Length: 406
Image (cartoon, rainbow, N blue to C red; front, top):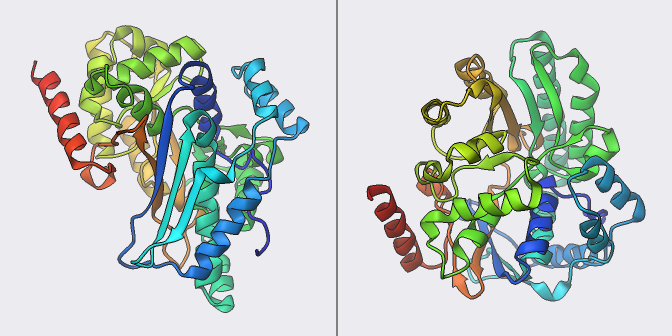
């Protein structure tokens, strides 16, 4: 094995811990299958040596435990996390028998993670970080690798200069790039650069990072709330529930767990239009805002603002968080469109952590099965859909269609 990539279980996104507590307390019976997907399979192959390295890195990851110092940080930085949940994390560690990792016949990485979701949820982000860093280190020649690093830093410095000059004024933004980072080393350097420069930004504010380890290291805010996996599991993983009401079940569970804390909801798991059916006045008041992750951001923003208006809610008190395929220029434009009508914030991932002369790893690991049944992410654009069973997609779409029409 080359140098170990994941050296701390805090090297993960904050929303994993938020969802992890909810899953532990309310859905410990949810057994899931996660599946890896390389969205650039036509142009990006894996080798047997890469897969062996990924296996060894996962083995090393599975030997990690939370340290007392890390748990103390989580407890202090995230006071909504309960003491019993922190106690659970003190005995937690990933287990190798959850993983099936191999090279398939098409020279693609086959990777699944199988087990209780309240345990396996912490594997998704670190494993994608491992895959990304391993592929770049083993695919690129040493000179090409160093060239890519240098270009990544050059572009980072150029972005920071434009934020300082005020050419881009995007308000509050945070890093969301853990899973697609070029490497942990470059990620560290980039977060440090943004943290050190943030007081000089004109019209922009680097709020923090989704990565808990680096939030701790650089004394910035860990950022995150909820992901598609929770909506898929709670809303679709139990056959007695109509999946067209997925968001209602999740919002109920979230309020039960956190009250008014962690109040930014992800709207697009089964489509924003059907989400709005459940985003009634009570939920719209309880949640601080909503997150955009697919589809046209301007259409989405107008739709959300119109919904708040229909409920008689002042959108100036609510946050529109944009997180889909952003760069600073696009964020600048989006903010200009909405900043005078609502609070606007951005979660920017790939463009911060993997913007270089080599294409980033366009990859996901998604929940595809809960308690032996298929689940799906539909999203607001077809290209982000993911499901093992076309028949289930048809069922889910028909359930949503019936609800929308009746």
